[in-house]
Image (cartoon, rainbow over all chains, first blue to last red; front, top):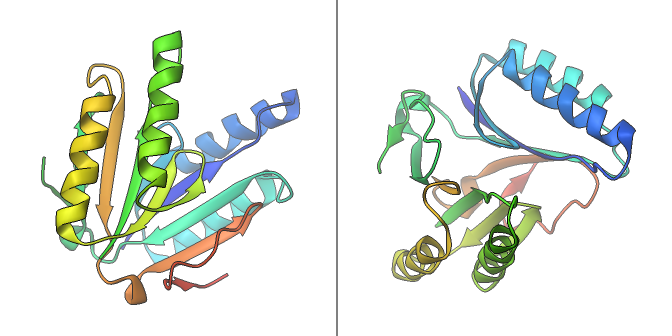
Length: 96
Length: 96
């Protein structure tokens, strides 16, 4: 399944900057970075549960947030990219 | 239809900071901000075309990017939010 992870980490403190780096690193082990705080993961449910628990202990839930968008089968995902740093197409239907 | 818009705008310059504000403002007229650079829009195709053209003249395509994720009917969208600033549920199935 294809899951999109987007996150906001409050970087007003050094601890926040550290959390941001760790969240990005944790995502990098499971998927592709497509924008600064956006990752696409083609992943099975068990491994995704693992990633979720890794991420959720890293963030400060009072000031940071994670969003997971379940996009179904990667073949059917409809995604368009406009502008710089177009990432590799994770088998989704990258239209533009 | 529900469309997710994510964007990265290079803010190393004053012009970039201005572009970022304008992109956010343009999105706000059509949808809900769910994270700093992430908007959800329940929108019909014609209005979405209008939003796209508004956004695509605002960004600098050499250094900024926009991604559009077509999530289908808002009723079927599977979205999870963990942490701060949980936005209102745009009729999607906000699971957590």
